[in-house]
Length: 289
Image (tube, rainbow, N blue to C red; front, side, top):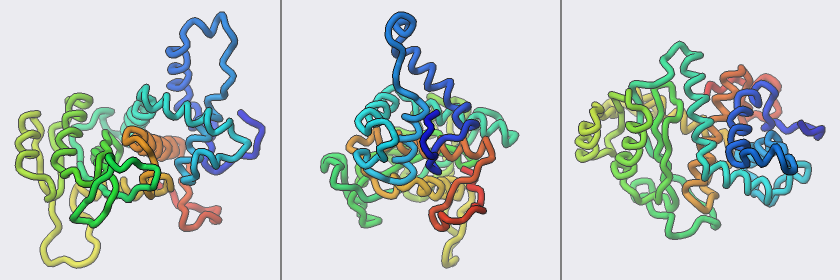
């Protein structure tokens, strides 16, 4: 661990113990036996992850990383490698199972919830990967996520904002059905069309549309769907996700996996997640992400 002064986003010893085996297994698999004969790796994986978490939590540009972290180009290089090798998705899956067990649930879920969120993009995002969500009047990208009934992330897909919810949902449901064959129920909102219902049925999954009660004004939690909507709220504690800054949609998905992994690691170790509404408070309410 570096001797530098810690940032609030840094991994505690307890959280590092949760993810260290995955990163060291990745390093060994990538370099293999060469580690036993050549020069040992110089990079501190914990410091690399701390720097990536700093970007995810604060929203700072990679080039603006503080100088007491490894060079930004090195940090981004590791982020890109971990994304392409599926490390962030792997971490999310492992931590999700631990949280479910901690909550007295089976490690594998049997039901899920799907929802989509359209967000604006930055100037660094290529135009071909953007689109227009006419319903929400947003030009940018769409994040479609699947969570279990606790709001824990099962899958994420980032597309152009103009992609219809049912199209993205079909791809997501295929992913979830392959990774979690025990899924038998899915809840969605009214934006998902008939062909999505039929596709879910071919996978042996019962799809139910949940809607707002007619005549009720103001915010009202919708049965079952409130879990996935709350997850979007948890993710917004990571300022990098307030807008889509990533050049590649796959990197956007990695940032979401990382944010959720950070929240779950804190939940497992009983550490509070700082709310940006009151960053000076020493008595932060616990976010159960």
